[in-house]
Image 1 (cartoon, rainbow, N blue to C red):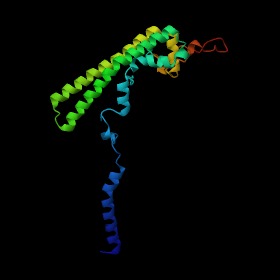
Image 2 (tube, helix red, strand yellow):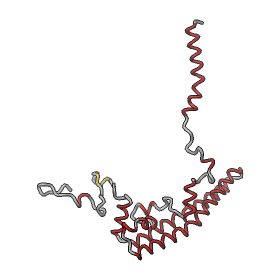
Image 3 (cartoon, helix red, strand yellow):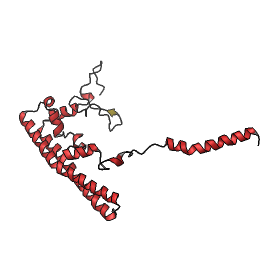
Image 4 (cartoon, rainbow, N blue to C red):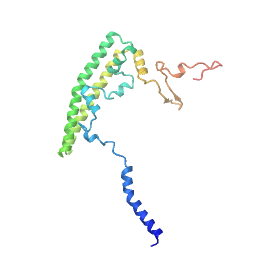
Length: 211
């Protein structure tokens, strides 16, 4: 075999041997990597802290993002919203009740997650046990979410419409609200108490309005 061909075969062999290594190096690690060391693998440390403290964890977004402010955030913005002493007292009581009801459920969720994980670790899990544990966890999560959403409903009753509009503005919910109108044209509401841009538009030079 000529030296040129021998070199070509040699290089081809090296290249073929490097291909599997290149694939291994290029492969992305699982997003779960490192989570095998968690105290409860299905829950981050932040999840554990929030559950034990009775915090919202985003469970009340259906209310928060639809004009039902949350007690904790209302108190954070008490000065900006100009809460009266009576309003502050009512909202504070709502927050305390919400967290007092949420904490035991959060602890129970952690307990059931630990039990579910233990059954997988020990190899004792089966279909019946899986159904029992996941159904129990699901019910607890539903009850926890209802507690937080109920607090948003109660909080809205304490505030005035002007305060709710201010809350939405301060939280950034009115900053951009682009929608597609029924006629296919894009429109938006600005931060001026939810008014359409047409409500505050300046008239055209000829006296007509563009809206």
